[in-house]
Image (cartoon, rainbow, N blue to C red; front, top):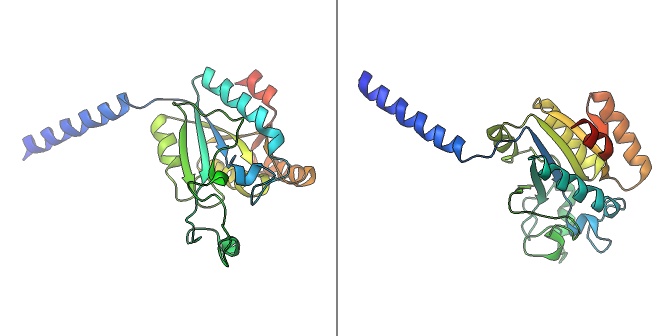
Length: 213
């Protein structure tokens, strides 16, 4: 019996070593949230007024991160055409013949033009505000050894803040890149930045990120 346990332990150890050897490690991950046509383009179903202006900063941040060996993760919404998996308040967008939003295979679901997506980037699908809620994001980041997340994308009061709160609760060093996050109005952005800073979430500029990290 002892020999059997020893053999099983050796096999398990070799499997774990193999998995670790195949896994990229990174201390920092850039989490780009919901930069899809339906949220960013003026023709999108749920366009956020401030989102389009952040495209250059988000792409700059992603390129900087890749140059540092950080992991870039694109968080995207995807919903069934019948809206079965959508937030309850948004079900009406999928009923009475409406097309919904972020349905796979549609223009609205695609990542907006101007944000580069490289082969080494990762993509995680979410169904609610937080990128961590019932997704594999935390599992993936922990396997990679990530300790710090830098958030970019849209929008502050919903998906950015929800993701930031969960990241902080999961003990990641949590940073919001001010140049790369957006809301419908500057007032909404400022109110959420004020709240997040009071929670202990770092809200700093892209220049500050480059200088410090």
